[in-house]
Image (cartoon, rainbow, N blue to C red; front, side, top):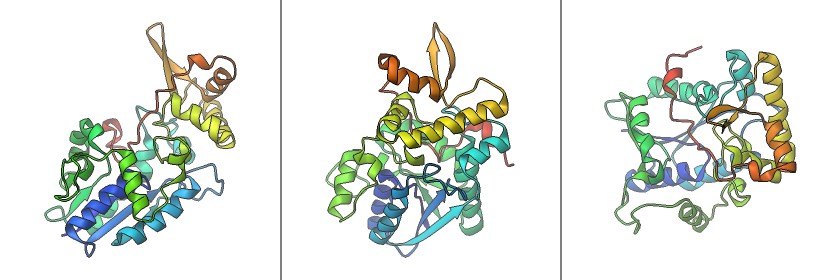
Length: 281
């Protein structure tokens, strides 16, 4: 029986993998990481550099077998190939760079009759479980952090993110630096097309050079498609409309009160968008 953890590089997937290791051991434990950086050389494209350091440390801490997959493209190459800029509603980068390669590995190396898939979402995201369970069929999908007392001796019904960080620190690990910089998620270097206004404002404040790369790449896609598209959106007078990162930056400089700093978005790379399910190109 294999236990396969979708290892994202975030503290949630570390916590889930640690729990699975403590419950079942590490002999048949697999930590599967799918990289979104492709062959890009820029430090501002793909995962934050510190994610790879954390992955190495986390694997050494947990044990098991580490599986690294890189499809070969970065997210911006996917957007151009598909002629579609990913956003919080449809993240084709997630589908093509994470979900599809991970599923291909599962189908080639695992048996749905015996093997189990684990994801790192917690109790605050249980509304996402039905889609996760459906998308991994015929494999069984489990979210240890969303199950109270998953470990009989954990002493806590549910784990909060700050508790997971403290647990990792007690294990001698230094969590990914994005958390200490105030980011809610350790995804795509602090950006991510699923992020909200608040997270991109944080990126602008903390890593302006990285924000500038996202802004330039988004504008490049707008020019390439010849359309008024954007990663972010807003509702004005009841109408939803694109909110380009250039506009967000100007607002941060001139009208910061117009930015929704509570809109952080979510990390959902292993939750498949239904409309992308048949997109195998």
